[in-house]
Image (cartoon, rainbow, N blue to C red; front, side, top):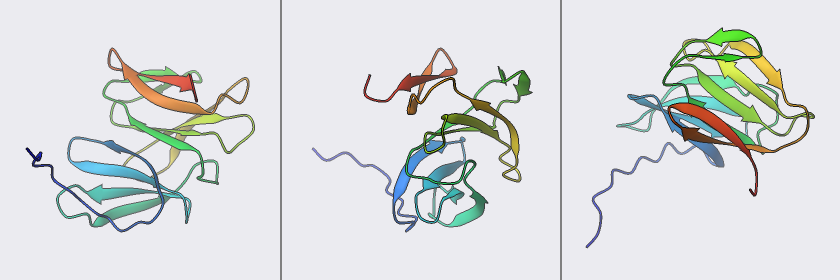
Length: 130
């Protein structure tokens, strides 16, 4: 039997990743390289922000459900972690969802091409392909 799934088409083109904040969808778009907050019910764009690190071929998004320390900076719950492996070295940015500003950036020791996953309420970044 078919599953009754809600479908939202925000019409953004090349979608790279998404996360859900409990109300809205956050999506990473390849071209133009930007983050968008999208109304989950209508697909309408509520806010648009420049992608941290520039290029958007390789991006991952995770919404923090609890605070954590990144690069020595306390990042509050609700912020969006953006992994960008187009930079060299790869970077993880903590983005404020209210205005798109970057609270802190962690440059990784090597190019892992990180892909975000959740484990025990914390984001875990794995090397792509592992």
